[in-house]
Length: 204
Image 1 (cartoon, rainbow, N blue to C red):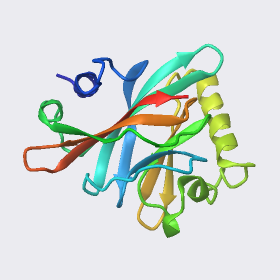
Image 2 (tube, rainbow, N blue to C red):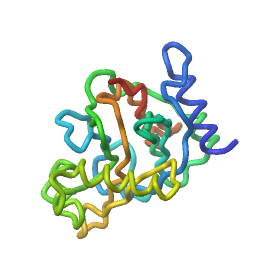
Image 3 (cartoon, rainbow, N blue to C red):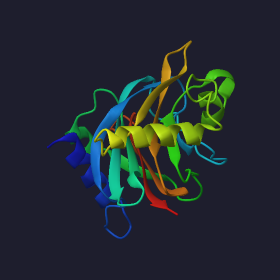
Image 4 (cartoon, one colour):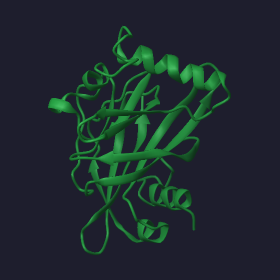
């Protein structure tokens, strides 16, 4: 079993209506160097949950990309898999619903990230970074970068940005067109160690 197959199996098994909870196809989008709590949030999102269930480290991030003829690529689910986790361990883990309330995304761009300087929200942290700092707002710069990647032929645009130079913690910024993640699953192995966090059931 491949990792993407394991992620898909977990999401389907844990959806109340036995559906996948996302559209499109997952791809390995990059790796997140976590330094503290992990969150998925819109660049202008005001309410979101943070998680410290997964230990600090370099973790794989998978994004489910859907394609819209007008907007291009958008992400409909996010899966973080802890370093060293196998597909078999992911499927065999105990998965709990962490939230079904509010986890705000953005209409144009959202991010998965860990530590930021001075505990800034992700939009504020990005606004200190070259490129983002010169734009009117972080969303505008991200959208321009997504469009450039898509014009170059990519159907899976993503930005990997170091948001805390002191620790090396990065953020993966990706296109979204929804406003809320209505399902957050946290997976733990037989020892209670966190091995994954999945955000899905995005809703406009």
